[in-house]
Length: 470
Image (cartoon, rainbow, N blue to C red; front, side, top):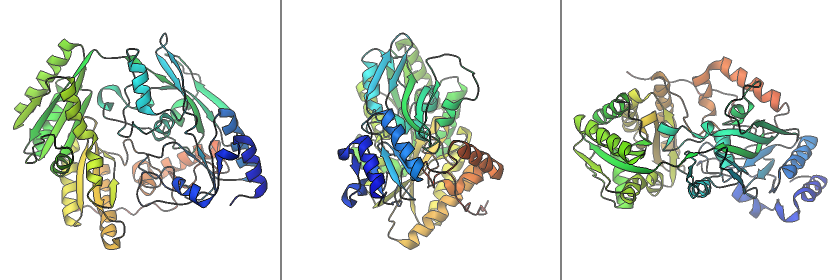
């Protein structure tokens, strides 16, 4: 509970209706979409303007109060859990689309604007914002930027960090900074815009963003290929890229995921398939038809037992829905769904999936794998029950082994979910002690009192490495 004088000052900034500190009001702010992490904050404020965020942060700095920025809390790394209590700054009231600049092809938004709403707004004008994280119908753009979100269209178009060109942000001392601009070129000093993207609310609080837009593609088409071998599916992925065909999406589901999704969505997926690839291309009708034809033939050449090209965009959307509903379908099976985020070079996909399956079997747990095959970003998803301590120990051991193998294959511990709490123990595995020290130095330069989102990214104890049995 905050002192009365602090409570009064915060209420003067945001108004009594937008200051919350009763236990029943705080519960919803004690967790996010990541299972197994929860801690009650001391209070929540819901500002409406950058100036209010600045004033709140100055009060927090004066009284040395920990602050946790929060959007829709759809992140999967425990990034918005207030692990040390403190004050949650909820940014959902800052939810305006401020501008669509059709001359400079940009959109300027507040952090609480929902990602899918931006898609709809710009597409009405024949424009296109490519990043499409799986949570886009509820996630906010501020959260996407803070977490460095990816999405299904990342192979061809890149991810959130590739579209953010300017930011307004509030520093831990309450000062407001502006980075970047509506510019095609800007090398004036360090790139602070890129530094804040993916910083998970540990350096500054994003209060406004300017995003790059593209012309909306004329058309799109989807194709799905079914395989009896994971190796054949992986070879098809590599050959599609080697043929200089870069699809918008090139998604993968393993047999466990296929069966669960088909049971949930009932769209006719072949449950006998060991793997399926879901591909989509966009562009001019001529180029789309050519690319889809080449991708379909490549899959056949790599022993796909069935290849189906969607007859129109509606059928294509139905096919892609299968991939987008994967997490929802899997989450129905057990009380706890742990969705992880291992990324390897695309040439190593088959090796990683094989290792995941062997690891799951060895530890007697259920893991289904799906993800972005085109960029090597896989989501091994464990279906478990956090109340079963013995099983949770096996789950923990299995993911240690999976991430060690991921790094051995030249990969990384997270491709799009962020580090947060969930991956903090693995960060040194990826970047080394020197990398940790450098990142801590950056954190201290921005936030010397460690007020912003404490307990994220860094941990006192790095997880011990396990020896992988080869």
